[in-house]
Length: 549
Image (cartoon, rainbow, N blue to C red; front, side, top):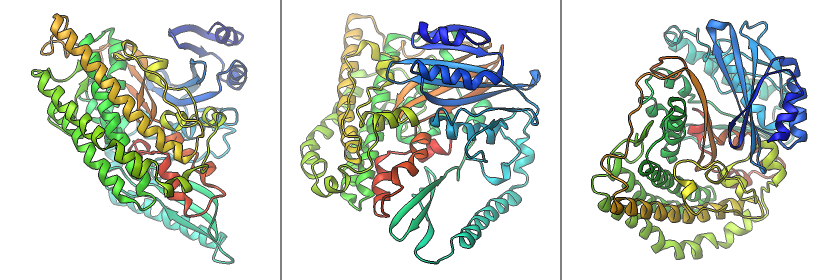
């Protein structure tokens, strides 16, 4: 960390300070020095941009751009800040995408929602938001949501017109000569949302993929600002229902940090159990969907059956199976009045998985059709992981030892026995294998946490009916925090900003890994054939809710 500080102190900084054990926080005075700072940080190993998070300080006529930069393999991170003028004509800064490709879509999102122009970006354009928001920058504090929503029909027509204009453009530029054309491909789901892959093909060969996201963009980060600090979890957990406990943990940690509060040991172990149950439920969908992309629906049905048992665990605790609202700032929402009965429900879910595990191994994991299609297909290297910030199971399938639960322990993970789970080949087959390895790891972590809670209750150190939640202030002090968790699909990062005596967040940036995993689809699929698209897309375990947050 000292080396990173030395690099930063060579430039004109307002401050350079320790933030957390793995983080340095710094603010750059002159935005014109940004690229030089990034180049210098890369020389000492900080090569990856996790996300870009602007904050609109409208009363001060400035937008503060926050860069979250990581040295993935040495676990050293930099939170770099720099101010830009809020005036749209002057609201610009150099793009770091040419130096850190992982920043690409994060800069586009910041431009589209805040109006920060990134000079030198390879393809600066409106992104994520629909055409009725173009040039309006909806996350600025002076954007009038009510006025915008009054023009509903006009807005819908604008979106439709853009689609037809795109279609006509492709017809004119490509036509139907030879065997080139553009296909609109992509899974559509009424709950998690649609995604369109514009597939440029020559016969059966894929020449280029252009991923188009945001069809059900929900402005979740703005919805959070409309609610109080506890009510915000309703929006936070909706980033993706396939694993909804972990986003609530991530958000709650940020609130607790600003409030200066630490939750009880009992609540920490409860967060581990709920988080791992959410991870398993999500992983079962991911693995089943992987086979579903090949037309093998049986495995998906098997996994959905197992998943129901783990959803029973969430329902028995919270009363809900999907949108559980089970975790909030201060701990976990509900007391555990009969912990033995709840632990029995957990054991039933574990037993269900273990009872069919051998059959899953024989019939599906060792499936020769899957192996012949997936082995050696769609390989990502460790360099790809670092350059594009591939996270979670996708990174670990390539051998990357990256896991926030280990790298920056939270909840009670620092008290448990947990090791990196990895594969070696980085291909589509390993991106399936890693999912099942992680399910078994999650089961082990749940068992460890249950044992710790049982021991704590028996010794009198834990009270399951009182220790679930500590008192949190109704009004928060001014501050900001960065929180990270290991979501089912990889690192989730939230950047929370509060003002003095506030009752709701001033700004919440929600960063989840499916953005980067979709961003690399062109690299992954270009040069392949049409039949490879479902397989390779399914191997990335993308959550469309995360994309359209």
